[in-house]
Length: 219
Image 1 (cartoon, rainbow, N blue to C red):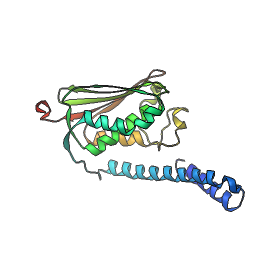
Image 2 (spheres, one colour):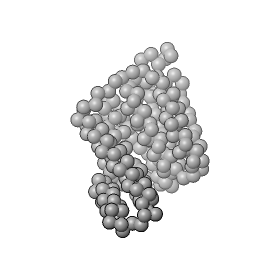
Image 3 (cartoon, rainbow, N blue to C red):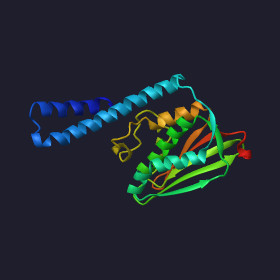
């Protein structure tokens, strides 16, 4: 379905242009739709390939020690335009000296996905919270939104490929429906945990753990 729908749309628009069913003055408008659909298909295929590599263990993690708080700040800056457009407030509460041992590129992907989801499902003027907490030899990272929330019966299924939580979340035409599957696989590959808490009408919080770097207390 995720592949067939955009392909059918692309085929229909192109045939409409070639057969002169779509008037000349509408060509640019429909070609822009085709371009967007092709871009979404490209993201979908790339995400499917990445997910297959993760599940097969083909992607090898490269561990290093880095400050998770600084990485979170960089991810927020990358999404600043989206955050500003919706007039959202980002509230951060960081433990200090939070050096972690992980693959920085894949953890950045996790953070971008979770923060982007928080932006997407929080209404204009809402609040997003990003926290880090040191607990024994772990650092717990939390990303919270003040959005629509998730039904209890859906919580265990949100990690499935292409699973649509509800009508409002399925309105997203940019995402591929694979983000949370990739996120969970990345965290699992690190040997860490990820879980979600949600309440309808009040929001959703994702938590995941990372190994605290051994020299974190000396940094």
